[in-house]
Amino acid sequence: MNQSMTPEQLQLLIAGYVLNDLNDEEATVMEGLLEDAEILQAIDQMQFALEAAYAPEEIQPSPQLRTGIMNAATGTQALDRVDLQGAQSINPDLASLSIGALPRWLKVLGTLAALLIAGLSLSNYVMWRSLRIQQARLQSEPLVFSLQPTANVAPTSKVVLQVNPDTLRGTLKIDNLPPLEPGKVYVLWTVLAPDAPFTTDPKNAILTEVFTVSPEGNQTQPIILPSAFQAPELVKAVAITVEDAAAPQRHQSAPILIQKL
Image (tube, rainbow, N blue to C red; front, side, top):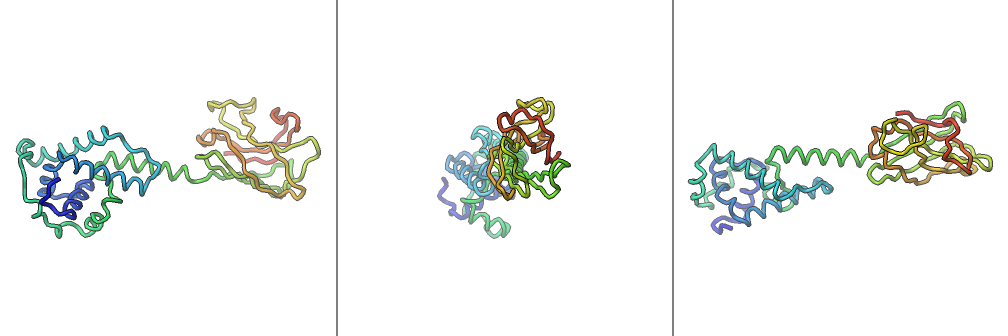
């Protein structure tokens, strides 16, 4: 790594590079440094640090892919400014770079570059990272189903199913559901689209949970959901029926509570 440049100047230069905010002089200097293995390692570390801060679950692109994109981008910029062969012989006085000429916000980012800066200069990489963050945000939001009573149950009965599609775990909250006679159970069903690639019964349903209720008719219990909830567009309804305890999978009764999607 070139020793004629202070650590702060070098940090700001790399920050400007990954953010695509260098002027012509700074870009020319940076091109002369890209063959330095320590510089490339510093760029990789900055990219990794910001990814960890803003999207801890996203998948890091392979080094080969990132290097190829960076080489393509820097090569295009270099062709517009100088002859590539001549650029390799440039060895300016790096200490002459003007830190004051950089935007104030870039100075702040430069100070935190080792922790927060990633490869935002590459438009396709930015799009990839934004998509991963948006997917993670959507996946982290629970799915909530409020089942409405039909004519087969008291209108005050209410069941709410909350689902985490990432973990396939959920919570079933039951209010005012009457206890059943011996030999009967409540069954929660997940009803899918007819062409869904899952094993279902003749009513396109998956038996999701068998349960009973307390004498008060109120309770909250955890449940495990079928993997179909990871493709929520395939879920067409969530329903509860009353079935024989000996064979609840027969699915012989009409819903007493349901939410259609």
